[in-house]
Each structure stands twice: as structure tokens, then as C-alpha cells.
Image 1 (spheres, helix red, strand yellow):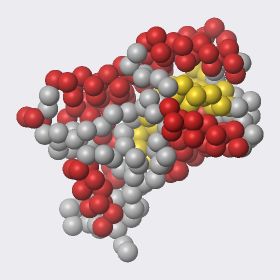
Image 2 (tube, helix red, strand yellow):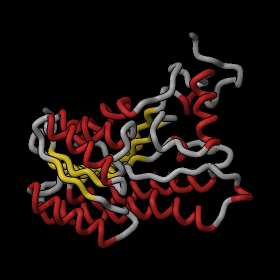
Image 3 (tube, rainbow, N blue to C red):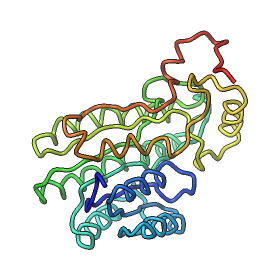
Image 4 (cartoon, helix red, strand yellow):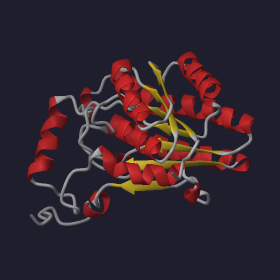
Length: 264
């Protein structure tokens, strides 16, 4: 119960096999009340029901994090109904793989809007609430190892996640005076419902068959829970502006020979 009586908001927590849902439930298991935000309101309701089954309070918001008024309402109502906000997990994300020369302005804008602007809006409005409360807080921006190493057909996605890394550092610098910790959680390849287009599906199937990840398997949402709980808990009091990579050694493995394969 490291988060007993804390209040959290987790964005993008409506997908059944998503990182957001796993983290939201993990926070609740440690004692937090959790507000769930997602454009998939039906999925968010399912997540909230699981949290309530643990004996914790939960709210549901059908929010597009790129819309300032919707984010503002979510923050205000959470603070009013749950007694403040102690933790924000910025997790709502958008991912479509497209070759650079085929990348449209619309896809670039949507990627940046969800993955960067959404984090800015929620982070700023929650941080302002935390400052008003005067009891500090924890903000976790879910990034990606794509902020560390690039790849084909995802220039736009990698750019957005690189921006999240520096957004995290800048927020940490300015909010430290208010004892608000801001850190980034960088997953590797995680098998989630966000995988929609055929190219990503093929890459995921290839990972399943011939994993080049040193740990020998793809990640799952549950693999992020321990790291998120740590960053949300008092145990990380002296950690801010950092990126915690959870990737089964993938970034380290990118330096290994191409023929490397994890043992069966």
C-alpha cells in the first residue's frame, strides 16, 4: 500500500491490453484512487470497474487530451470529487508507421498533438493543481525507447517521443521547487492493443518468432507496473528529470551483432 489514499489520473487507460490499464490497476492495488481518461469511454469504464473491485474509487472521463477545455474539466472534476491530485500518468498515445517520403502533414500533426501537446496540456493543468494543493506530486510521462534509437517508417513517432523526453526534463527543472517529481517511463516493444496497422502487426509477429530482445520476449503491459509504482511512490523522492527504460535490454541489444538471438 505504498500509494494509500493518493489520487491519480491515468490517460489512455481504456485499452484492454494497454499499458495505461495495467498501470492504473497497479496504482490501485497499491492503494490509490484512480481517474481514467480515454477517448474510448467504454474501455475506460471497464478499467474503472476493475479498480472499484479492488475497493478503490475511480472516475471515468471520455477525454481527447489534445483539447484544452476537456483536459481542464477532467483535472477540475477529479480534484473536486476525489480530494485533489497526487499522481499523473501521461500515457495516451498515437502510433502509425509510414515511410518518411509518404508521411502526410495530417499524420505528423496528429502524432505531435496526441503524443506531445496532450502531455503538455495534462501536465501543465495537473501541475497547477498540485502547486495549489501545496503537497508536491508525481508526474510520469510514458515515452518510448524510440526517444533513444530511431527506426524505419517512424520518423514522426520517434520525433514525438524525443520531444517527450525533453519536455520531461524541462518540467522537472521548473517544478522541482514545488516538490513535484517529473520522470519519463520508456517502454520497449510492448504487445498492446495500440498495434493496429498491418506493418506494425507484421513486425510484432516477427518479434514473437525471432526475438532480438536480450531478455528473450516482447514486453507486456504488466512489465511497466513496478516501474510506474516506484516513480509514483515516496521511494522516488530524489528522482526527477530521469528516464527509466523498461525494454528487456533492447536498447543495449541494439549494439549487438545482428545474428544475436536470445536462447530458447
